[in-house]
Each structure stands twice: as structure tokens, then as C-alpha cells.
Length: 213
Image (cartoon, rainbow, N blue to C red; front, side, top):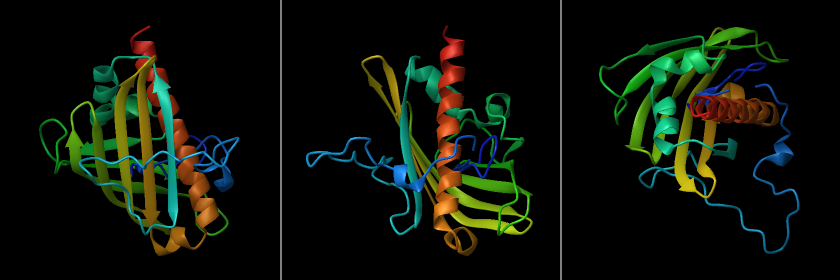
């Protein structure tokens, strides 16, 4: 969970992950082109080894960013999860549950603050993520729950794709959340998730490009 909540509203990633907030995102903006036409075709959802996010989830967000850095640098930043707290402020702690480099079956546990909302108290979420699919320099998919005092996400599924294109590397991501508490307010949950993923992408871009400046 997904990773995988970010600086202002970090329910992160789960995924975000979970993942997750600095920018307020309207749910109307999710996957909607600014000037849609009858010929507009939404890009296919990212997958890893033919597996994607939870198709039945009500809470879903996807985005992408172009990063001017080598794909190996971007991949290493994203998969060296022990170092996430050094470049992602919302990740307040990280604990590897397995030894060795990140691989299919690897597990890691991380924390991020979640502020109070109209229906949930301020808390710290503990996210336990398990890597289900991974292909080096290409894609990664993980999932798992996020638990805090008075707030829980039963499962977040987070997929990342990395592809070399003109001008750099296109990073695409999508995440879904499920659970009674977050499903009770889909627009707000989607806003938090979207803001978190946008911040994660921007942090990844800033760190990778600064390293290669």
C-alpha cells in the first residue's frame, strides 16, 4: 500500500503503498485529460508481470512524471526502501522485515503521520508492505494494510512502472485502497491518496535529478 499521505496529509502510500499530501486534488481530476475529445483514450493502467491494482476498489488514483535521470538511479532510489526517510519527509521510520535487496516476497514496515479529519483522529499509520511482483528497472507491485489508532486501511495495492522515453524516464504509478473506514468517504480518501502520490512522484524526481545534476 501502497505504498503507498504526504507532507500535509500523509496517508501515503500505501503504498502507498501506500502511500500519501501537499497538494489538494479534486477527485474530478483523477485520470481526466484537461481537454478531452471524442478521440481521447486513457492510458492503460500500469501493471507488473500482468498484475495491477484492485479492480474492485472504490478508491483509486493514477499519475505519471517525466524524470531526467538514468533509469538505474531512479530504480535504486525507489527500491532502496531503507533510505526512503532520507528523501521523503512523510516517511518517519522504516524497518526491513527481510534481509537482502528488495525482491518478490520482500516485506517492509514503515510509518507516516495522518492528520485528523472530520471522521478520524490524528494518528500515526504503520504500513506493512509485501512485494508481490518485481522486474528490475521496469516495474514493482506491493500491497498491505495500514493501521493506526482510530484509522485503518485494510489493503492498499500500489504499482509502479518505469520506462525510458525521449527526455528521460517516464514513471507511472497507480494505487487503490480498500477498507470500511476509507470507503465511507471515497472523495476525501481519493483526495488524500492522490495528493500523496503526486508528492511522492515530485520527491522522486527532485532527488533523482539533483543526484545527477
